[in-house]
Length: 133
Image 1 (tube, one colour):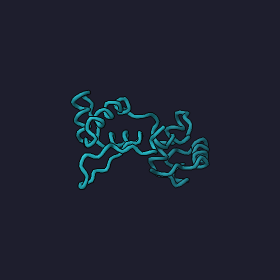
Image 2: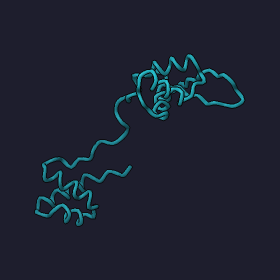
Image 3: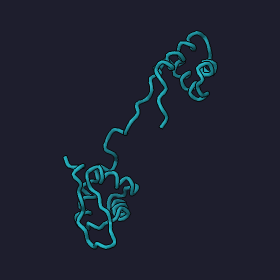
């Protein structure tokens, strides 16, 4: 992810456009890319603020959060169930498509992880202390 350009640079860009320079000229003066200059120029012309958009992790719990009890029931029934099997079960039971990595992220967020080892057979599902509330 790219670094956010400074607020000072945005203010200077707006001042140059207010003085009559076009977005391309203002961007060239401040050594901005043409795409950034065009994007900022459009915002200035429309009266929008030049504040950077919020960054960081997404807000919310995701579309799979509602299916957590379903996954936990399947894991309780078969502790050795794979992510692919969980994915297929979700599709069959709820006609919902998702990736195996999405299921993995959901389960890890709630403290569930499982490492399969060839030397062990039916191992109980591990729950780490991180995800406990």
